[in-house]
Amino acid sequence: MTLDRQRIIAEAVALLDAEGLDGVTTRKLAARLGVQSPTLYWHLPNKAALITAIAEAILDQQVADMTPPDPDERWQDWLIGLAEQLRRALLAHPDGARIISASQLSLNMAAISELAMSTLVARGIPLRQARVIVLTVERFTVGHVLEEQAPRPDAEALKDFDMAAFTEQHPTAVAAIAEYFQPGRTVDDLFRECLEVVIDGATAKAGPTS
Image (tube, rainbow, N blue to C red; front, side):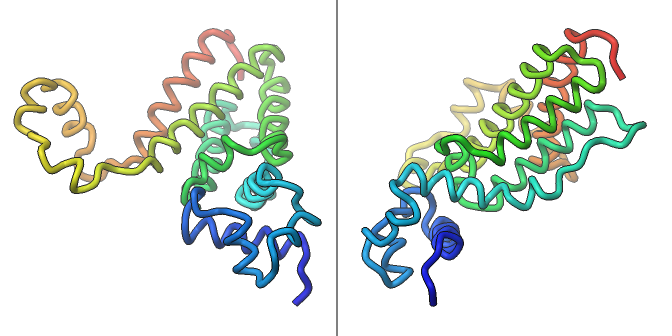
């Protein structure tokens, strides 16, 4: 089978899915493709280019599916939906948020920013404010997913953990978590509600818009 950039990137995404970002090395990728590492450099000159190519692949489908809001749709609701699309794309792959954070000059992230900012400007948001709103939403989304994808405490870390003592020391935090995650409420709801706080604050600062 001919070795081309598309095949290399597809195999790199498969390697990411199998081993996470820390397992994505040119040596392992070359082994999966049945070639020597230097062969990859004809298509991707360094690790940074590989990471960016993986980021583009992760976002490709989401970018293809993006559309402007309907005329009667609130831009706030549309922007939340766009952020939810981005979150789904990142969660679809191990360390997806780390990949996006480490990528350089992602054209797909630029496309998301362009659509979001131009949409807000078309709805009467000043350009400067539109940039701040979109940047905040994008960074919140990536940061939120970074937290979601962070390693959880293993058995060794939890060996000496005293939940009763922790609850006594942090009663409000523990109660808030228990109260929030009532039956039927999920981490998806938490993401959306946090995002609504961010966007509602931005809307208030921007002034009356449609």
